[in-house]
Length: 239
Image (tube, rainbow, N blue to C red; front, side):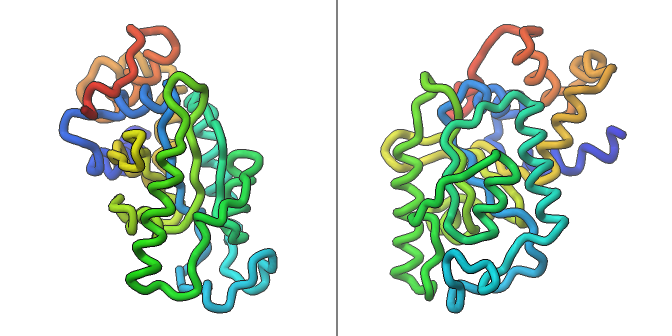
């Protein structure tokens, strides 16, 4: 089982700062006050549709496939299993983003700042980046429960200077600086949430915690949340 789980975690580790580990960003997520930018779940081959899309009319848009719906449900289930507190959930008003939010988190408020422009040119690119930075600047501080969840499209995160959220369903964990800037703590492929949740539930997880593998680091974070290790936010690695 372990060999099947590790590839997704290794992909996530590639996006982390050198001093960070899954234990760090899982603990930071559990402390609240972060932003999870979740690209909508799987729709099949991506192609621009904003030129003809009518908001509220899903027949004019690219929509989730059945695999995408299952992917969105699995992401939400895994986040709940990992005890990641969810605060506000905002979603682009496109059908695929609203449905991803609903399936993963139960609901999502439409947010026009995450919508796609009709045409993506240099001005639109700058506007999308600023819109996302403005939303991130409004993220709740860690003293308030929950993390801000933004369900959107790859354009906004790239325009704001973040990593390309590939593939569909990928999530970037962002540490806001309070002024619209942010640091990317991790970029997770969609299956990484479930991989971590499965490892956290393994009967032999305490043996795995002792090793130095990425899996062991992730399990150490899960153990800390359950009171098996001293409490820490994990944010020291991100200064």
